[in-house]
Amino acid sequence: LTAFAVHGGLEPDLLDEVAYWIEQYWQYALFAAVAIVRACAELSGTPLETFAADLAARHGIDIS
Image: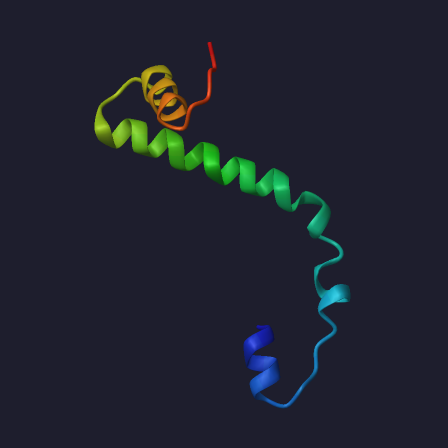
């Protein structure tokens, strides 16, 4: 909506626009990441635990 507002000549106050949801932003990002990992595991036919372990190992993270 901000892009359309600016195109229309308005100068929106972005701080007031996002202040109410920015505190929960990271929680929503985590939920999205979990959903994406689960979907990828399901689409590949790999058990979630194996998929997560392989993903972590690929990035040098020990989750055991």
